[in-house]
Image (cartoon, rainbow, N blue to C red; front, side, top):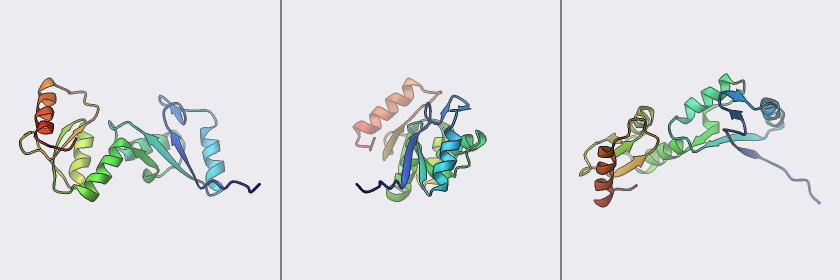
Length: 146
């Protein structure tokens, strides 16, 4: 039977690599050992409240020398899609200020007017209001991507 060759590892973060602000015991050693064997690591998160670069910085502070491009989260997937397919779009965002800044840096503009919205983005928003929900709903009813 041929030996399996692994090229990459997709690792969840919270509870797999760290718990809260503490690295899981042995995570850095396994990362180092497998990285030296040429196996690439990618870290996945559904947390859109932080940019992938912020998550990567947090992992580095815990002692794992990773690069920003090794972290893929829902925000980075969104920013990549905007950059590739929706530059120039007007986006209504329910989400944090860093996500909004990332959307703008990806080539879209931010709007709060549901009648001019092309895309509605919803993520964690600690300043959520029902007015934001109402405007998002109107934009979606008018045909905005969600």
